[in-house]
Amino acid sequence: MKSKTALALVAVLALAACGNGKAPVASDQNSGKSPLAEYMGEGFVSSSGGGGSFRIATRAGGAQQPSDEDLAKQRKVEDATVACMKDAGFEYVAVPPEQQAKGKFSDAFNLPPDKFAEQYGYGVSTIDWSKAADDGGNPNTKIRKGLSPTAQKAYDKALNGPNANGNGTVVIQGGGPSSSGQMDLGCRGKAVKQVYGDTKGNIDFKKFDSLFKDIQALQKRIDSDQRVVDATSAWSDCMANAGHAGYKKVSDPRDEVQQKLDALTGNQPPAKGGPAKTVTGPPSFDKVDSAKLADLRKREIELAVADQKCKAHGYDDSYKKVQYEQEKEFVDQHKAELEAYRNETANR
Image (cartoon, rainbow, N blue to C red):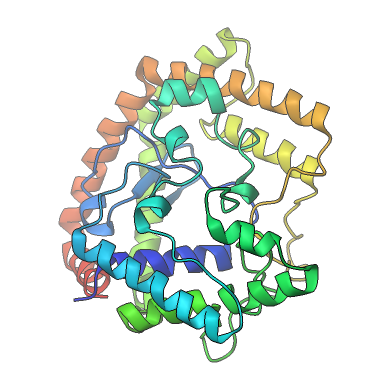
């Protein structure tokens, strides 16, 4: 059985390659492990708010601590990256996994929900996610910055593959990996494969399409449960009383902030039926009007604080009760499929 850390490392690379250009959605910090999460894996979050959707995500901090074996393998990945970069003609310094584990924003995401809202709102306009990989404590950042612009591009290509750009993300033009299904992720990808084996492509998620569709239908049933509908109405009234009227779904405030940020950064989604869009990861705030960004950040924090308080007044408890009831019933009815999914992912 391959370590789950191998999957995590590959997932990090894959997320960089398939980012939607928006700020990551942090999973609920106070959410327990629901009945469905027992099968879908750590980080599974039922997404409330009327979208009929779910997500599998892991917050920046608070993940399960890696074992000594995991840490040893991560060190081997770093050492293999060093050797590969040396062969390519570049200097790369192995970064201890203990240093990697403390991400730039991990302290923020370890805050209690109310404190996070007070300081960061939803973490949409208040955190420049394009700077997440720009770690001043990483010696390789300094090494790269000391190169000429041309050499920097060559360095990025060697480290993260031909589709890499300077901020650690990967650009996909027009739609994805090559026809072979393999993406060149440079020395990082080679190092992961060398230490953990070829984990990419071993899981055929298409065979679980039916399960995923059933989970989406489950989410719609949860959202349409009368107890959730009533709790959502009470939440909406609470928001209005706090000076934020007009929100009908609990996802509306955050979505509004995201849309306003997209307008500021020019990060608009492609029109339906239009040409494929180049994916470059979260947009930088460097060229955003600073006054407008400051106003949006103030608005975001005000909304998030009110939102968090109104959810705590009954919505969260009502939603969780319905969610757990419905998920337990779902698990009973789909146990064979869920066990197959869990076994497939656990053994890769």
